[in-house]
Image (cartoon, rainbow, N blue to C red):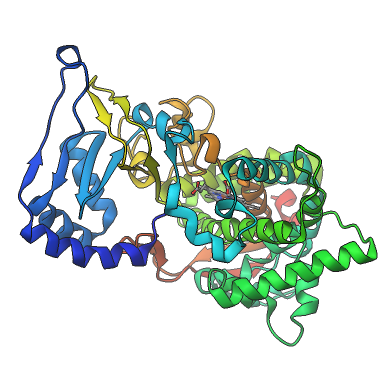
Length: 482
Ligand code: HEM
């Protein structure tokens, strides 16, 4: 599965448009009576010149509206045929199991993630065979598992510096744009986790180390970061220095045959973690803030929760107190439902398989198709999510638990099955550290209009500002006095 590459899609739009004009119309819906045929039909397809209205919607309103329209028209399984590339969309939990759980021999991310090889090196991920990659995924799961996260909370707290204005020990009241500070204000957390923060600060003295990370994904930044990590690994090895961080744990990881990870592997794995965790976490922190600060009732409930926790544990924040922040957890989860950082996942079909829809139709998805799990639609299914346009963290709370209504593939922000994000617990932990600290220590108000989402980009971005006014308050003392 891959989060769709926006430039590739926009360039294909033009090509598809030309192709659409010269290609025969092939448009229709095939409904199946499973009993009457041995092999179920292929899903209803949009192709040929029927693509034109769809492209028009794509270009004018964005891909979410475009997919939503197809879903309304065809139901949970449909194919869009672009220049011979057939992409079948599987919408909703009833038809998603094979997407997330199908064996690698039948469903794979195939070539979609090969672009990562120059970034992380040929010793990890899509540069190695499936058996090695599976073992490396085990390393991720191990180094990011909740039991190993406790030690990251204290250094994170020392770093909670959400932007220039808010960063000083006793800032005077002011205003800051969380969206424009996004790259620099929320990054330190991920740096700490991986163990690079101190080293990177030292090594980029005179320059701004964080800026390298902001450019993550560019060849120059990848090369620079790779060489910095390699140097850190070498220096730790030569000095026998042992730190308590993810990098160290990766250095200590071993394959089943007892072989330890090499320097190139540790470097590649840590780069992959950074790449996977940096944009996703910063975007989530910003959206959570924007949503919370524009819903008075939710903001009050989140403050009330902090107040209760402060009463119980004092102003200390540690791993256990973070676990008690269940409402804040739901606030983040709801922000992620509405603004998933990866809006669509893709995979390639290597062997035909059959899906059965909620309505009882069966379709065969043939080998060669690309299959897509569009979170932007999955998370907006009316028979699952009540008042789906409303920011309502309570939907995940006790008694409702809408994310479980359709089974385990109802809520897919962190993907699922074999490809589930190993950093989920870490992601929640860091966003909770950021927002519990901010809620406790500042009176915050969103002073700009609620930001829009740029749906014309295939990786939808926040458009506009998240201008927040802040005033330091002497919390948690003042919370207790209330
Ligand atoms: C809200 C924040 C996050 C979201 C929504 C998210 C989501 C995802 C998703 C959907 C995938 C699967 C992608 C695919 O299969 O194509 C993934 C993979 C991954 N994530 Fe996260 N992630 C987040 C934060 C993090 C953090 C903080 C870390 C590490 C500290 C992390 C580490 C990873 C790694 C290492 C992989 C790749 C696993 C592999 O190669 O199979 N993620 N993430």
